Amino acid sequence: MEARPSRLTAKTILVTGAGRGIGRAIANSLAAEGADLILSGRNLDRLHQTADAISEAGARAHVFQADIGEEDQVLDLFRHIQSRFPRLDVLVNNAGIGEYGPLAEFPTDAFDRIMRVNLRGTFLCCREAMRLMLPQKAGNIINISSVVGFKGYPNQSAYAASKHAIMGLTKALAVEAQPHGIRVSAVLPGGVDTDLVAESRPDLDRACLIAPEDIAETVLFLLTLSDRAAVDQIFIRRTNSTPFP
Ligand SMILES: NC(=O)c1ccc[n+]([C@@H]2O[C@H](COP(=O)([O-])OP(=O)(O)OC[C@H]3O[C@@H](n4cnc5c(N)ncnc54)[C@H](OP(=O)(O)O)[C@@H]3O)[C@@H](O)[C@H]2O)c1
Image (cartoon, rainbow, N blue to C red):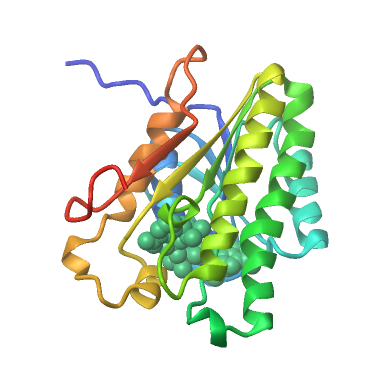
């Protein structure tokens, strides 16, 4: 049997928050399909661990440290991309944080921290990616939202608000970008086995959580559709949760 050709060869893909969790799994999976990965995040050691694993598997990965909540750092990241790569094919806005607690006791600075990363960071990366993708007349932006971008859970009001806001941003940008050949979609997972969920849902049995690799497969699916098909949003839930939430 002939080997299947790599499906993302010669694609340049930026993944934010690629040092661990879902972002690392997405980076590994896309690199295995031949893409050139740009791995971004704050923690350089973890980014280099992801990059080393990708290189050992025979693919290419470049590391760039950036806090997506800081405009200067996002501008530096995209200037770096523009200077080193002929184009940017895909942005996966994965980086995100959560802080949890009853709303009546929730500190304002925790609310601001969440919004700074999840909403402002996603906005900044979308804007800079659009500036590169518009002249190309092609591109894909995938925003990792959450099941709480659709529904609510107790003690997650600020996190849920940030993920609902990402949905608003994604919907408007998808309409705006489509005439320019740019597809924008959202992935809405619930309960993935990472550090973030260990903190937000300590009640969940880890054995029942979705694997980060499942989210990576979903992103790969979105990126390997034909140019004639667009998927706006995908919900991915634990098989022991309620269908059609
Ligand atoms: N786990 C779940 O059940 C679940 C469900 C739905 C949605 N999500 C979403 O999936 C995404 C990934 O989450 P995860 O579960 O993989 O969490 P995680 O293991 O905590 O990873 C979060 C990632 O975001 C990066 N990050 C955080 N703040 C950043 C900042 N200011 N600038 C740049 N990078 C930053 C972190 O890298 P550094 O620390 O190196 O900066 C890390 O790589 C998040 O958007 C999260 O909301 C997760």
